[in-house]
Length: 512
Image (cartoon, rainbow, N blue to C red; front, side, top):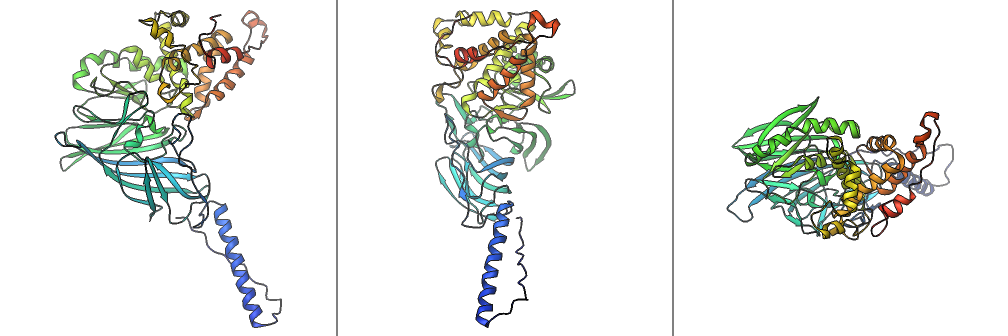
């Protein structure tokens, strides 16, 4: 705890007191004023907000689709998670987790209390800066009231000890996330809110942090997570795996995969590649996973330097989950992926994991970019061009049935109508079509500069649709007219029609 010494200003001895009572009263008033000024100074410089001052941080960030996720009043900088997992397959509940979360954060206001998102699990104790704190539960909100307030700008450490059987969350669209039991272990997936089922935190994509994730499991099982494996040890028939992510990560792409895996360590250039594969999927997935170095080299050429310190993949059984997910450093796949899906999830490391949406309304900045990367991969490797794929999607030839083709036009990609629609076709395919329309408008060279510069400028940060449209318009204004490129003449390109018809417009826009 940062202390603030109470320095009392000296009282002038040149004024002659008229009586002892007056002296006593004057000294008392001076002491009170001095203490008040000192406490005020301590609050202003962020050291400590005295008890009874400050206000509670907001319980929820008012996300357009998940308003209760995330919390206001602080910014998390680091999570240190220590998890001990028991897997008793013949009992109910089958899994038991004992956890300690040490959360380092900075107060962004004078805080009298703050909230953490935690769904299920039993809280045993909470401390803030080593002192016991009062706490209460209400739904997914864990409200913590420190013994002393936290001044704006103060970095503090909260420790939560908890245990229980982690839950599965069924999303508005019917998919499942959270803590998912598998045939030989468990899988933690978090998009959009599932990470709150296995650790307390600020579970909104706008608050990214670094992580240490240490997991202890029965001997013979692996525990795979994000970042780099820095230690593996065995004691009393249990194995502990310690993972570290030194690059900022949104909680929804944090993962723990527990099971019997074949582990392969290779390199892509100088980049470590760590792959964990269910043995039953090893044969079918090997040819695709062996192309990770090729995909990474191509992606760096197209989108700029890779933003993280390692890459790889986790391949579990087909029944482990109903979808693949761009978990940071090593995306997750339910069963052996095909090459197109591998490209999609690896490119998410640039668009989604490094450049992360400010709210869930901005999902097209993840999925539209990764989908367009699939088109570019095909264009660059002897398949259909991006223009041909665009035409096929527009004309309904890209889907096996008419209903699927029409679904692309159900709503504008920048404004899904509800939480259950944020992963629908308009977010993916029409989002990719927006990018292609920008490419048509400004030309190939400026467009690919835009993709790289966007990823570099917002590296490890957050962005929304307005940030992107403003950024794209800068490139449009600087575009050289192709016909006059030799003379250096420039021409303004108005992207307003692209935004109006393709990004925000209802229905199917005119193709031209």
